[in-house]
Amino acid sequence: MKVISLRLALQTTVFAFVASAGGAEGAGAGSIVASGRGSVEAKIEYCMDCHGPSGQGYRGFLTMPRLAGQTPEYLEAQLRAFLEGRRGRNLFIRMATVHGLNPSMRAALAARFRHLNPPPFGGAPRQLAATGARIYEEGIPEANVPACLACHGPEAQGQYEIPRLAGQLFSYTTKTLSNWGKERGQNPASTIMVPIAHNLTRSQIDAIAAYVSYLK
Amino acid sequence: MKLGKLKILILAVVCSTSGPLLADEPLPIRNCTWCHGTSGQGYTVAPRLAGQRYQYLENQLLSFHNHTRDNPLSVQYMWDAVAFLNPQTARDLAFYFSAIPPKPANDGNLELAAAGRAIYEAGMPDQNIVSCAACHGPNAEGVGAIPRLGGLSYLYLKRKLEQWGEGYHVTAQFPMPQVSVKLSPDTIEALASYLSFVR
Image (cartoon, rainbow over all chains, first blue to last red; front, side, top):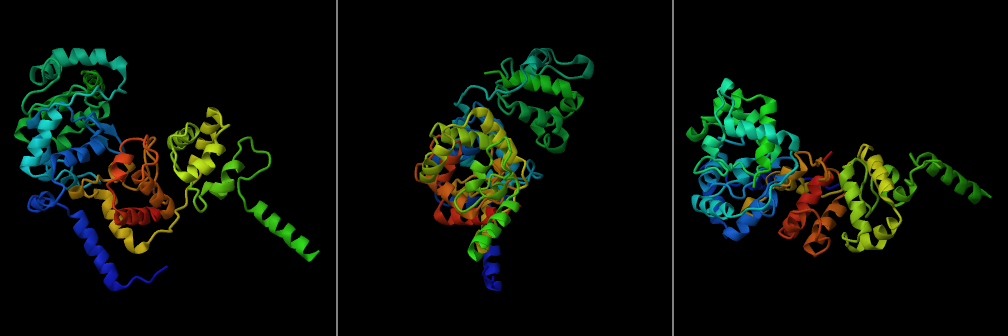
């Protein structure tokens, strides 16, 4: 085993710091984008390496949600939220780094994903879908939960900043609805979800998530 | 006569320290540990099997069997090794090895470990290289059929990443072939070094 000189250890530390501080919170974001390989094609492949070859989502150690067919406004808002630390602060991955993009790249990628429509990822418990359909279409009046379709659309396609839910991964939807207050709902557009998610029971969340996961 | 006694002594020592190499075991474990080392901890080019995710081990055995994993050493050794392996035995072997506590190889370049860790955790977004940790976990432990990388030997990891870049095993689980072709030699060195030390 080699003896590590102090100088070499210092250099390695600096290198690691630079490599990991990619484009973090706000001010450094320009440095990511200014470097080469800025083409949208190369960048979207980078997105797809985690989110699936057609943006259908993937289950790694983390669950990477479906991006295909998502509304551009919602996608861009999430990318901004990651970059600005409103989302993804508590994960072991530095989300601000891996999702650090400039506004024009965000817009270009969102436009690309909008037009993708692979089949749903699948894998959710099918037997819950019927209950989920009922909740999705009628809400739960006694719990002050409005019908999801009122905002998310009858086919769960979403609109503007209200996200598409159709085909979203079951485990992603359940995790998001169950933990809403902890991380989400900080964007004015999504605060509406705070009381709704809070009023849903775990089994209702599972049913809704199963139902939308099979929608095309 | 002295040499004969010495040989017997060596044989006795080897047999007594070989752990699960028992003569009456139902699973043909010796067929694996012969190359993969005592308790499947790995030996030279044969990777550690101990502590690996059983779904991953099963999938690899299948890929050797149907010849989709086609790098030279796999062709030379593993294709024949699993030619007569039935699915149930493959599953049993996978379970067996997955339950053995793994030992890290610790054979990478220590000076590159810090750089490798940074790449493992955050990837290199400006070069469109994804974070390995997103799928393989914060401690390279893997999940489901995604393999544990922590503590695998530096040489094995390096070669595996290079081989995807060389066009082998193109039908491997997405996105490994796609990610690996983007990795520079320096990046591979750093990653393989870092991971060889991860417990």
